[in-house]
Length: 570
Figure (cartoon, rainbow, N blue to C red):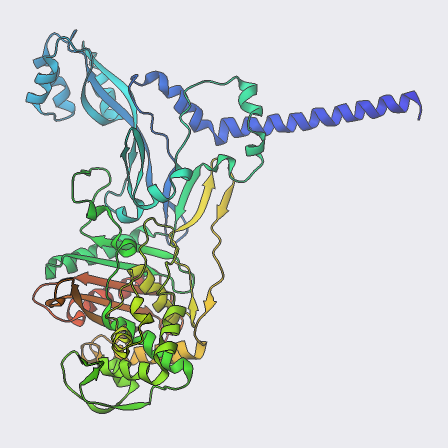
């Protein structure tokens, strides 16, 4: 190789290196100025902050509208904090009047702070909107100062607060508490490094993060929660709770084919913008994920599906209903204690007969019945992307006694979370598959990349034909039995079942006058867009779920049909 060829080769290599470095610089300029521009702006804002202020910098949580648009559920709001320096504030009365004209404040409390003449810093008002702060600043009041402040804001108030969670101090650190704020703390939090790096140090210090998907794993969260549907569900739950003076009421609306949750709520609720940590902390918990309940008769369709899937039971199989059974020297009865004589399995669901599903369990055997229940996932956590999911209490499925399996067949003696329950029941709606409930669809990283949440493939737990047959039976329950057929929709098939369960008492076994009412249904029944689960705990002066929850379910169903323009199926 000649000397000139070597030189040309070196020049070519040098040129390639220059191009590569140039590309890296261009990308990092884009990353720093565009993608991370807000972070640098936040750093610049530090010069406007008081020395003891906490600069809250955190990712956004979005809802998703039915049209796919992102709607802000939680974000960082910028405003002011109003400070008085009592050492130089000479006319406290005049200062009070000027502040109060823009922001109503407690006069006695203000004058008490203004009187601390040995103090140079007293906080008067926090979280002041920028426009209001500007009006106060224009008055150039001696002894009064305004500083930049950022705080976590939830623009929709209490909407989906049980899903979102909130921010609160843990020791000396401000962190996400409950809900997605807690679950995705590592994604949502930002590094609040106050030091300023040299431009080229900043540019080249994180080349790996520049070209990788997660770029430090910081980002925003996009949820599946549809804000209008969420608001409607919350209104419906509040209405039920107040009408029947229940201890609490909850509900979930989900796509049974994908596990995508479009609404999840309970009442009473709270406003994450304005809460007190001293308040009963149970209101902050997501009862639909964190608590377990004996669900009652909405479990009966799962028992029926187990029997039909084995081939030992059909909708036309009959048994002699005497109104009660005695197993292991213990008596179980129908809800009214009456016998119906010879009836088929359709009537077992239509009339919600405890003895009928106990008959199914006896027919297929305790071991097989328990195996099917486990295949529906009721003995495992769903893995939902929300914190503190509770484990089911289903040890009765391991019993060698018939009585425990008989009571389990109609939803007593076993306790499940609502999210576990709707997951199991979704198998009836989606052709027999066990899906993965979730509330987050995507993470949008600060680098500009995004990641769609990938879920495991659903498992086939019963035959499609079994699910279709049980669906047909549940449609008849709505058309003929629920409120004596008054709930039937002429143009839409709806599959549904009510449940009324005695609430357990650790001292006496079960209360005689306290019940949990539950309701689930899906529609259009043979190709459902949504499955809805509702429950209300200890409603007063009413006994059955058909009285407390049917109307709310039908109202929600009609709302969803209209809102999503779901075509009729009959």
